View 1 (cartoon, rainbow, N blue to C red):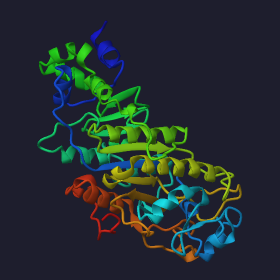
View 2 (cartoon, helix red, strand yellow):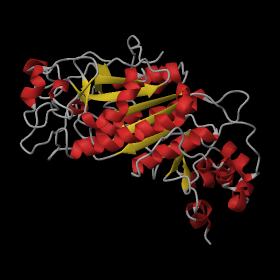
View 3 (cartoon, helix red, strand yellow):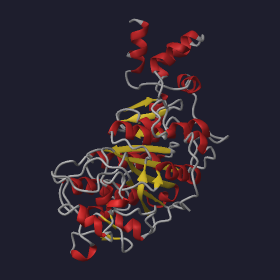
View 4 (cartoon, rainbow, N blue to C red):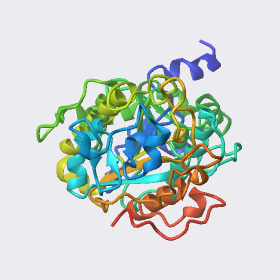
Length: 414
């Protein structure tokens, strides 16, 4: 077998290794991790495709909302059972988000409206890249903002870095976790891949060049200690608790496995999952239809996660995001086109809920961005920065979001 083929195929048949040499040495020589850092967990959920913020967190108190959306607007709460779920007399949740209402009532849910990227792009690819890199309109950024957090924050002095410190339930490493810090991407707990942002083959070849070839040669049987660690922790023994019932959808099962990792105490600090299907140009629907069905899976899955984790939610924050919102006016196909500002949800024990955050810009014609979209009043980096500093404890926001100076805290987290 040729060495290059071994590096690119044989040595990474079960896992794609993109790890630092020190981590690889620990795995190769079978050293046990002396103990992993336990603490707060951030779960990032990406709604890919641009979720329609105006029909997710419904401004039923805004008269222009119904003028702009004559056939797809969500009825005000007073208009029957299949209508907006009242939050504060002005905003409401889409009725398919009913499973999240108990979180609002318990003070664990905080919607953030008119939030997003200051970039004017309406390209899915660019907007997602900017959101995950944390550098709007800068295409040359090579790493994601969460990987920069991992690289800058390190671990506690008494703890060894866990290979499962940052896990994406995805077939490949998402942009937000790409970078120098090791991360894990897995389709499921049964079959997972260990990845980082670098070229795995190049890093292994570098070990040969630096005289560390014995590490690579010895990796055939010992390279996958991370697999052994996961098997030892046996996260799948943790079944849903407190009556939690996860949807059988891909998204629901990914959240179920994130819960299992948290319960296994493998040192998880950052978890990521995404859910597609939000690009609703045609036949979006109102209280029923395409968007409603997607929101039902979204809400049922998150509700199951929070129920399952129970008291552990005191150390967990769930943060939802989408690359941008959608056009305020419905189009001729019963859908909505690409827009600008959107909405997020923050959920967790430290979240100061029962309040919709963000300054509402209005939907009158002269209040719309470029005369067509919900205007932006909160930069997404303000929200990300508050979560990173308050929940994760970082003091290096200038490294996470270079060139951005956050304003005053929104107070989403206690």
